[in-house]
Length: 415
Image (tube, rainbow, N blue to C red; front, top):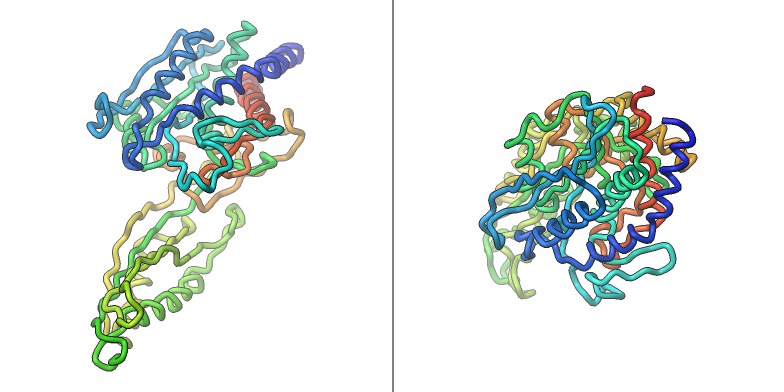
């Protein structure tokens, strides 16, 4: 594609900015919290998006619903809007999700979470950054091709999935299980669902995720007669401290990741006894472990069990260990993969910045694709405020990310 065509389509994206803002407002106004979080699901939002896509010229929209009797209608919406390119043997897939997390405590918001508020260069509202920014940017990029009459070098496929916030069983997992031939090895896959404020981070790898539940059982007694009981809280507290040794047992670091090492953090603690003058006979707490791919989850759990055995012996308690989540890291996307090269080039062209390929501690749906040998990059320009009160997206980021997507769709033939 010529320099003049690049200029034409980038200018068209700028012209479409007011329309993109209006689209964002409509998306924020629709509650699409999933049923596991006591919400209505994504159907209303999905139907709105499909109607909008048809209005702006998308001729090919295909539904891939997942059966789920917990929502009205019995289905969770997944759908693909396809824009044909000059060549049919490769797709640029941009995967976004239509579900959002609950707003949480409304008193911590300065405005209605479901009413978009624009202040300066920011749009506030639940879902604005996670994942409506990605939705709008992806649509804006494809919309610019349609409205200029220019054709992308490859097909552009916008994939809108449900259930990302609560496990993806009814979203991307459903697509991969029921439609395994959808993605090809030569395809380019971008997931705009994580990033940094300067847009330099291209996520290519993730750590293993291990959430551990510890239940310590002793003997409950009156606090004035501690010798007659076994204080589960005290034993559990010593266990928390002993688990700090995990970092030394698994010390490997990898500069691709930030932080470079594995992390082992105590997080949630359940209430034990409701009153002060009782020694608790049970205590429950949790650890969140983010483990470098070089280590196996079962080896971490074996080390945890050994540490717990020592606490059991010393304090005469019983410690039950169970996992709330245990997901071994997927193979990394190669840092020289075509999708990474294109994103680097596009970020340099649009933002004048040099991006870096990096691993993260968080988990995204990219892992599901990487396990199937598909190179995928997670990228966006964002402040990472998605699950917070007063969530927002920056309008300039929304527009510039669309230009980077356009670049990837136009320039892949040159690599």
